[in-house]
Length: 117
Image (cartoon, rainbow, N blue to C red; front, side, top):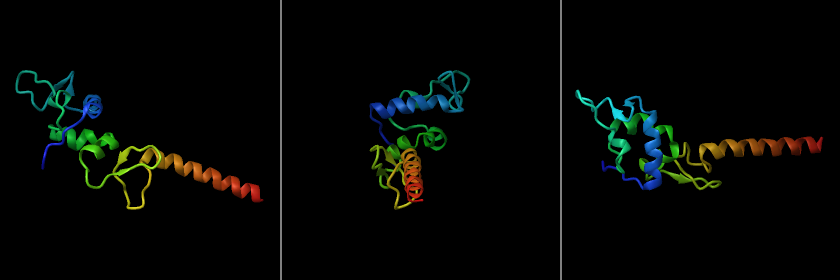
């Protein structure tokens, strides 16, 4: 498997996410600590190097995860244009927009129903 490369906006998102990692203490990685402190490699690299970060922390940001890992089965949201991994083949919206679209359609359906009564 090749190591995914990030562009600058993706790198900034990933760097913000490194603060969520349970092994990151003050910018240092506990997994790499062998007696002296070692800086977290994921916070300084444009490549996706840390396996722990890839498995446990990256899924917290679905759009970044989709952009970096699931290259072949990602879709673009019809509403906002963000890349996401669809949960079915009929999905048109990312999870955030899907929630908003569902509320909008429910609202419209209830309005039509009340206007007809």
